Image (cartoon, rainbow, N blue to C red):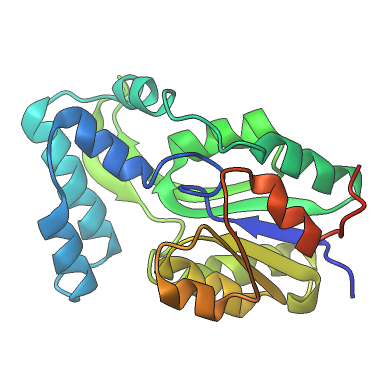
Length: 218
């Protein structure tokens, strides 16, 4: 059965950065290692993880705003071949979606610049002036991207066997398990490669097209 939908992780796949969250942490010269430990050990939930990270930024700049974040995130480049990959899929009538635990400000920019159809990423609460409140907007569970994947597939009436996914870290394994084809792009951990059907290494995302639409993609 041919692929009708491709689900992309964002960080490390569509954009050339390890994490949109980490990019902001680095800008403010803070580390979220402790927050990350607490989340993965089950001490805090997804929303508290976001709140804790935003709290780190606000400790450096109490009135940090959406404008500030856009300025930081706009400096993150697309992955080489990202635009070409999405356009090659669209020419064949294949739908595309971002499913990311990253920041929606970046995901929305990537959606616009590449022509991706759907963007699902996590947001940040702000007041009428655009200043961050410290609250988060949870759209994609970091620990279960598969839930969002199934929701997107259902909304498009596309079955598992008609769907492919592309990711690079352990949090993308639920994506692989929810789709007929799972592609690891420069996998960060051995478990990711083991769970994927195919692995693509290198700096050009167009390498995944061989496994989705075949070699004849011109």
